[in-house]
Image (tube, rainbow, N blue to C red):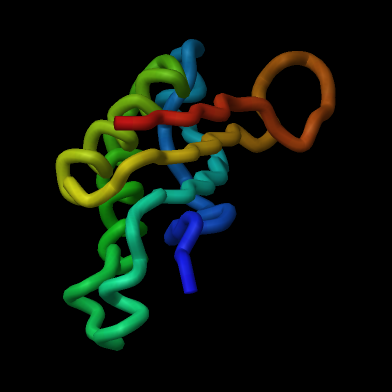
Length: 122
């Protein structure tokens, strides 16, 4: 059996945060969704059944929460900080797919969200 690829993911983590170009967005805040997929070799955890051998998604979630607490004007900046924090915390990570969505952004039109989607590799 050959493992071709493996990832751990968080899907649509919903957070209230204070990001935006407009002063009111940073003062009032809004709803954001964060999804990420961290690529790494999961084989050791598959064999050991030990949380120490994996990327703990509860810890990963808290890492995202801590980055989202820091207000930024641009979602690109927030996403970049999250990516750097993931790679710093998990040296075994080889790639990261990240989507950061601002729900109901103040654009004068109705939409379910706008944001950034990024793919990083080491």
